[in-house]
Length: 218
Image (spheres, helix red, strand yellow):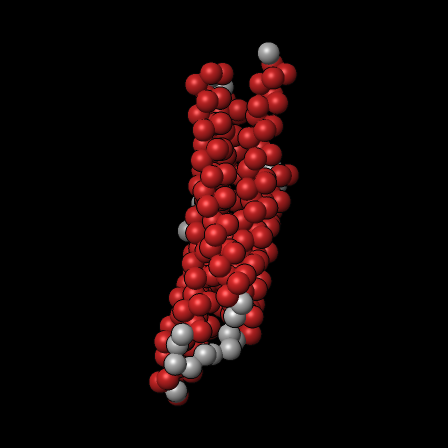
């Protein structure tokens, strides 16, 4: 009976990692579609979002069934509740990736297309790295690695501000580019919010490992 229970706990962990990997691919493809203005890839990202939603629901159902049937205590219960929270954060991150993908087609219908500034590319890369890092921290239950995301989030905020100012300047110099500039500004905002999801996941990792709530992004 105990062996079966342990396998069920491991299955939740594995399902969460698979979901995280899918979200990583969604974000990477969304940013790639934006860089290349690739409508086909952008539409694939949007269509695949349903798979992420289904994965989140499956994790929730598995966890609630385990809690009801096995009545876990202490560490196991903490891990299961954190898994539900992490799945929710990943699902939200996937929604942001879908939002970025949807902006690709809208960008192509603006009066004047703007090539995304290198700083926006940098922002996307940093956020991808943060997502990968928070998942690594979860796999290893590495508290120090989880806490490191707090500093990176400050870098994201500063870079987002620079991107917004650059795009505002472009729009001021050429009003025809305003619509596209606004879409790219919104993309920068979405990436910043996605970075916040990674710090939320990191906080859950710390909670699993230490049994203490800790805010790393005050």
